[in-house]
Length: 345
Image (tube, rainbow, N blue to C red; front, top):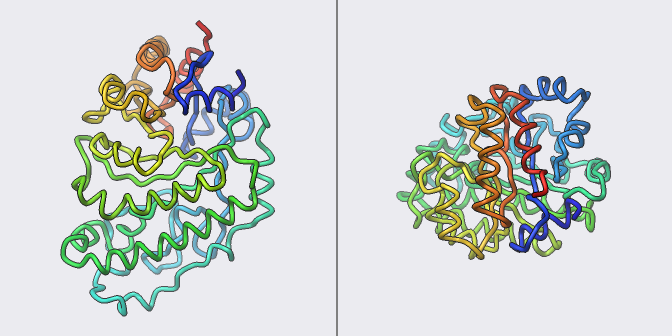
């Protein structure tokens, strides 16, 4: 099997020769050590050197205030959106908004002004044809709407003033649906899958009730999934933390792969997910980045991968349990993950 065949079989829970495996998107500060360890000079070469089944592509977005699409909105109106150290908890520019008229001062960016169509094509064309070409769309409308108010205010507005919350969320969704269409049209027939996400889980459970997730997050999720599916793309849906209570809702929305299995989060144990959702959805993740990949030995990492392969003979993309590998993860443990994942038993 090549990488694409392996991925599609995994998504459909069909037999595979060995698991599909994804490196994720290492933090920029983690990359120098990985480059040195693998003897490569850039991220492109790294993705090829580790034996990744995926080739992840970020949407090229450059505006006067942002160099990443997931940081497109200047919620603090200071002209400096920091894509590395963003927070959802600081008060946003809509903190005091009570009526829709209170939102009119904000200048919403038009993604068509800041996405280079030719660069979209170039980035996807750089991927080897046998790899799974994965568009990193993010489209994190829940997180952006929380940042627009400040998370505490946003969550309170969901209860006390849902109309103002929905008004901002609708504008954010308009932005992402348009941005995604630009990227999908530019790369039509070249992508295989996309990653879309909203962090709505904590270590012990959801950040808000399942009912609130269904009311305020799932409608947007469904729109984004349907848009991707209309271009023939598989959808990997990301949320950190314990989201076991709303995985049925993600399945209903059409999500193909749930990412990640955050191994130490309550209810996200691989055995539990297998028992509850076998045959209904596929998963990605499982190799713990909170403790194991940081403090474990390569032998312990290999043992975990073997365990995951036993639990999920198919239906699981082996990957770190967070897509952003941090600098505290030894490169030898990443190599151990891929070495064991790529073994054909």
